[in-house]
Length: 593
Image (cartoon, rainbow, N blue to C red):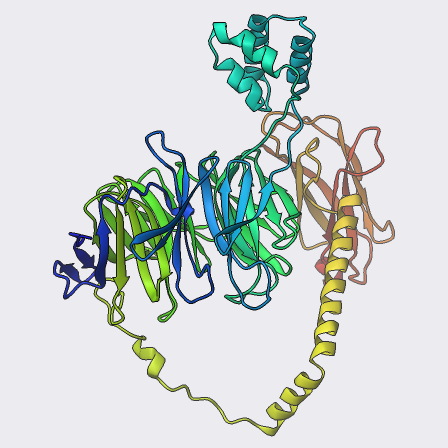
């Protein structure tokens, strides 16, 4: 064991000695031979004895086999081989029975391996995908010796370049062989059925029906075929399946599966998609200017690290809140949550050997490490609540413990609550009427809520019906169809009894003129007289405003006014394209006479 030669810095100033540092150097082993990333680290009480262990999905570099390692303190307690590279590790509760011992889920290849008490418990395999029909037909021809291996290779390469669906593993292996090895491979595998299997790219957990810390959780899987799967924690059946436009690489969830949840997926196309309960497709999309390297949810803010060496904060609806530029490339990210102080912050491991801790865009702390950090994990380890575990690019292991007296400060601000929090509010005394209303609301709260909801639904229904009626009867002054993009508004001038009515008609399309329109005016003939109540409209050039003038004469000597309806029609059609209702003013000339 060796002490980590690292320094500590916060927003108030540099701190180089351990006495002023917020962290205790618990362990540093540069030869630990642990190569992994943050998604494959998990902390859990695997035996229910209060002793938290570290679970590591080791990638096994240098041709070594991937392994599942469990560390207790600085030592490796158990180690077992894995059939494929690990994609993610997570701990979750499968049931509420006592004693509550969490299960360990490790995603590797197309399978999720579930362990209980560090013993194999269940293996979930992703459902197989239907093979490409052209690929299946080629292997059937090879089985009947109707095509030679060289032709088979050329046809498979053509399918791989043109088809949207990827080839099966058998075909991909065949395309990697030399010409001398192809015939033996075809003879060995031509009788096998073609199987196309996807793999898991990312995994996280989602609470089932309660938000408690010890509540049952579901597994959420992201797959290579652009899907998200939610698994039942007991039967390991697929509860929900959602589709994405691209392959997910990072997942963040909030809420409960049975109540309401939000799911954010960062994908390989550089976008982040937001999904909600009962939605098969994304509801919102966040377009990034670079590829994401990490995705963390801090309260209601999604913090994204990008390959442009920057951190971005977004709302769940895609609005960008802030951006922070990093001094070096971001290698890994994870969440720092200090329950005793209610702190949630983002940890970012940089290529220059720094680990930076941010709350929103405020820098809280900087840790310098002897090598670049490739994975981060913060939580309870052993019997210490606030432990930071880091693995380095060279395979080293660094363990630090946050001091119980440490307080993260934003910049040079004061520690503790703001002064306004200590001011007493001048709360008025409770009157008898207030108490009676409170008792009434408490007793009839359900009925009041139902009445409010009923009125709200009726209001929405009436608004929808009125909107539909306006669309069907073309009561809007703006055309609702893309084929006839028109806009109409009217101006009435004069005191009476003769008024000048000017109709401003405009073609709002970008390039297409409109021809063959008619204008018709509907009015009460006992009150008004129009010399031009029906006339043709000239050719409407896009973007220009065409004033169409006519005169209206008031016939009533009692100052009575009415509505004149103006309809814009297409020749040969009875349904109007758009309409306007003009409230005519009273004739002041007749009234004065």
